[in-house]
Image (cartoon, rainbow, N blue to C red; front, side, top):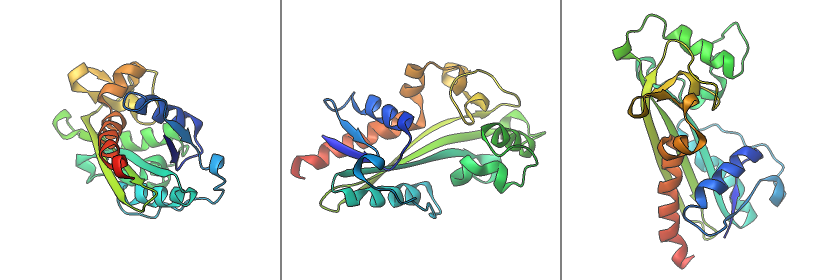
Length: 205
């Protein structure tokens, strides 16, 4: 089975291949570059689902099963921010520091400064969209709820992982092993849901 992931990020492609291998026998995951799609995809949706579909539709011109995903952190006390702007939150907040993972984390800490523990809830969200060769579309959503800490814990992961405390395991995402994170993460849950939907669909593709 061949799928095109609307990405050029080899780490994301490897991750998708690893997670889908639990459900399918040796899935072949292609990148946009692999299928000759060179244009940049403009993510101008207003929700995770819309952005994931924009990406999947762009990849669908390849003729293969096309997959797009969009993910981010939503914080209750911030009205759902950083949300779809998670990767560029520091810039969106006009944060004076760097506009990278560190800057995003610092902007988040600054905007949540002084909030008590009971008001620091949030969720990582991942939406996966798929466009099949016959034009059918599907989306799934995975979430992992947690609490935003006031300081970093752990050296693994990326993005907001060092600040996201996952209560059931009493660790931040940055303190989890790769295997642990895949079991409980928003992305792991979304991919499991996607795999089940895809299994139902490809029987008559």
